[in-house]
Amino acid sequence: MQNKEPESSQSTPLLPMLSFEDAAAAIRWYELVLGARETARLTSPDGKIGYCELWIGQATLSVADLWPELNHTPRELGGTPVVLNLQVENVDEVFARALEQGAKEILPVDDRFYGDRSGRIEDPFGYIWILSRRIEEVAMAEMQRRFNEMSGGE
Image (cartoon, rainbow, N blue to C red; front, side, top):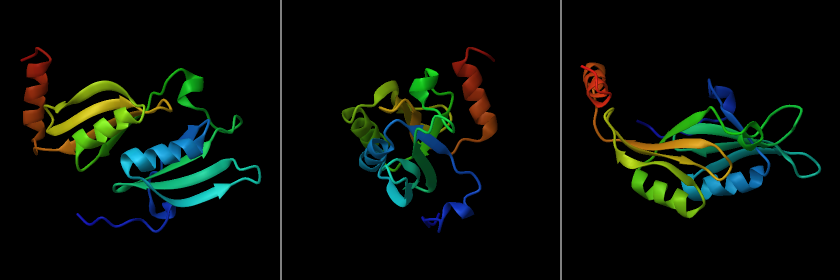
């Protein structure tokens, strides 16, 4: 698979946007922990980030400061229903770095029935991430069998 960065979000069919009380702090955290690279930014005259694109792995993510008339943060809403699943090269290393930088562990890193080694965190801004690495290709029928076994079914 070629690691080609998109020229802009215009070529991205789905571009998630996350909102923050302090988008600059979130950008720094994502750069440090997830290896994000900033590719575009729009800032208002008062310094508020209206839009910022981050390249993380093979994906583009946009972030912005809170604009109460347009968006909300997980903290405002009492949590987030959205879970972001990010494939990383070394899940154990990235997971440990996330915890060192203030993330909260939700599920520890482990080998999962569906073929990924993964763990789940809540970042310091309230967003939930699954950090994972594919370790085994599992056919859907086998995945269902394992899921049934794990769930106590037949």
